[in-house]
Length: 196
Figure 1 (cartoon, rainbow, N blue to C red):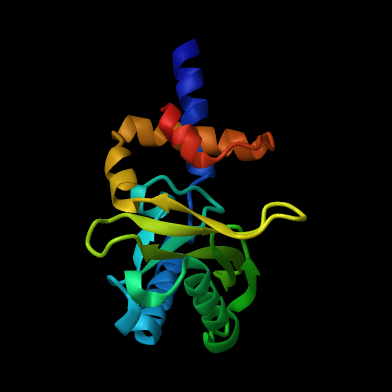
Figure 2: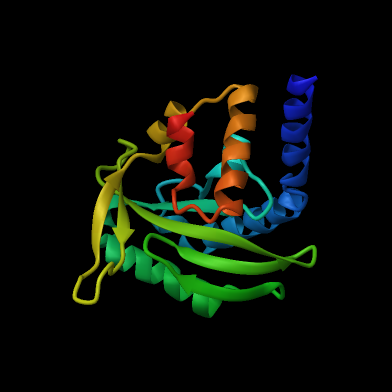
């Protein structure tokens, strides 16, 4: 029957893109969260939080984990906050499985060797707009040759609350993410989530 053939294929795809080392990567992320908290506790608005596909139950093989580090309003500019976290990741943080630290547009990308695979954890520095509102500034690095760093306003808790998915929707999103990777399609996973 044609329907069971398609359903069987899709179920096979879901099994094939399952994130087998998610638990090990999550343990690594929780250790990094603790180290970030130890280093910046007096300046933080809250304990560093996990965000992204791992929290939403949408991770597939190769998905990264995002750690958002929200600093209090009086910590300095968002560029200052970004630089402090950059310095910590590049100079103070030690982990035998850490293989690289990359400066990215909004975050710092840490690469680890976990279960013989390269895994990524992105550390996203934020600075509160007004303490207690949930609104934060997000650093936006240089995007062009003559551009200069800037920032944008975001509210991660509102974003997370807005994207509440059923089990069927989660399966569809995982399949779309696998399709995107297999076909080298340049679209953000967040846009696929909004589409679903």
